[in-house]
Structures are given as C-alpha cells and as structure tokens.
Length: 99
Image (tube, rainbow, N blue to C red; front, side):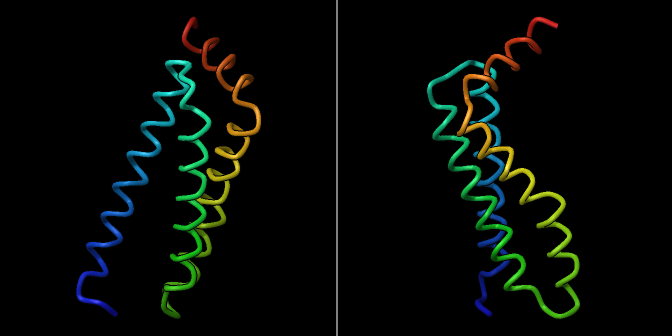
C-alpha cells in the first residue's frame, strides 16, 4: 500500500462530491451540461464501487459490497437514466421547482 492511499481516496471522494453538485446544478438550471456531468458522475460512481470492493481487506469486504450494492451502483444507474432521458429529468425538476 502506498503512503498516500488515504489522501488519494479523500481526493477522489471530493471530486465525486463536486461531480454530484455539478450534476444537480445542471439539472436545476436546465443546462445543456446535464448529460456530460451525469455521465461523469456515473463513471466515477462505478469506479468507486469497483475499487472499494477490489481493494477491501477480508474484514472490510462485506461493508464494501453493501455500500456498492445499496448506494454507489443504484446512484450510477440513476445517473445513467439521466443521460438516457435528460429531457424527462429536466421536466421533472422543473415541476419540483414550481411546487
């Protein structure tokens, strides 16, 4: 293991948080950047799930699998849906803004 392993994960998680924020903002503002931001967030979530599982130790594996299965992969699927049907997502967000 590298000396800066924890710092690398913190940096990755900060990047993922920024990607979530940019995706949410793009949806809220009906920006044309929604699709690329959602695609990037999806890719980051898939990478996060993959590396969490394959780098986890024996005592951490169940936690990594649960996190991947209950959080990262469903959120990646949601982002993939946004990429697939951004118009419907933006229409739904517009309805939320009125309510």
